[in-house]
Length: 463
Image 1 (cartoon, rainbow, N blue to C red):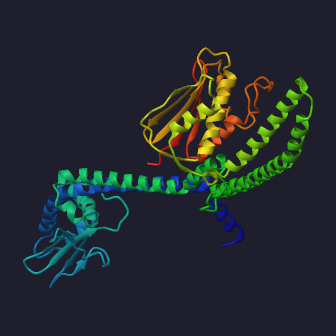
Image 2: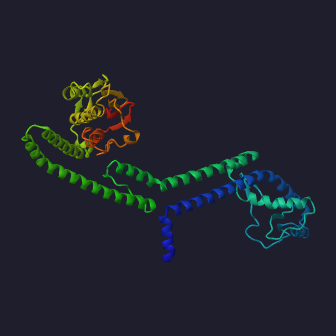
Image 3: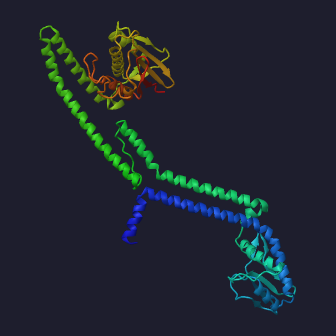
């Protein structure tokens, strides 16, 4: 094979579009051939049993016309008038209308019973009939014998094709239906095979989808497998390369944040000590408040990077969630009017109590900060739902617009773009809550409660 055709074949093998097109063409050809063969078989087997007695009767008529002993002149006249090959063998007469070949003595078997277009006369001569090799159309048929000769030509070829034994055991009127059903079954089988091949060709799409979902969650531990060398294989490799670049970029960002956070802790501590020495007044209070916000920001950044490791960052133990909620509200939010509605049927959960307290504290702080003048205080509730426990914190404040809901748990995102001091926070509270819930194998959902906002954390029971 020359270089150019080889390159063309390699391009076809590499092209998913070309392979799918070739598969479609092969399927169409196979279905067309199967349909034509099935219809021909249905006609042949339906025609065969009706034609056999007519052919046998006509062979007897031709033998009677040739006579006993056989007349070569009559046989020659029949061979010239009809598209037949006649051969006479015997003790006296040996004659053939055409040169002998391997087809002259052919016999057709039908369900174990021999029948043929040959007859043995009483004087020992044997007369055999077959199809003529002449391609020209026969002369005009002038008698009933001429009409039956055409029938002999067609049916003899059909009988020589060797029908299956199962069809011979079936009534003639049922055979076309059976053959049609078999043809349909073969067509369905071809379609099923084509479907399987297409599924195999498109199997990398499932791997690519699963890989894209993993990369979207920030999990770069398992690359997309490259099963074949075609467009989908190239796409998987390109996505893997892109994911590697993103992974390195995110790692560099995390390392930078960690380095800055660690480096800022020492001067921030010294700045706070120096601020404590400043005289009482509004300026001192504002400075201490700003320094406290910077301290909280650094703490949240460090905690978010630790939680990026997922479950490995947790220190779990058996926890009664209801007792944890009551204890946190009693120690950190006493007198703030926070309501509770706790399900007494909760099971003991395997949790990191420190991280769950951080999650709950951020949610309650967020609810109190954004609904300071609400007539109804925030409500903390728990309930068991199938194989998970739902922890919900709802406020009755003004809420946020629907366009912001999907982004409230993103890092540094705030619906209040002005970041006024009165509203507090820098947009890491709900982000940390989402990381804590995901590290425990759960999820965080934020919904508009009308009025207010409802944040729901699902925690698996481990059953």
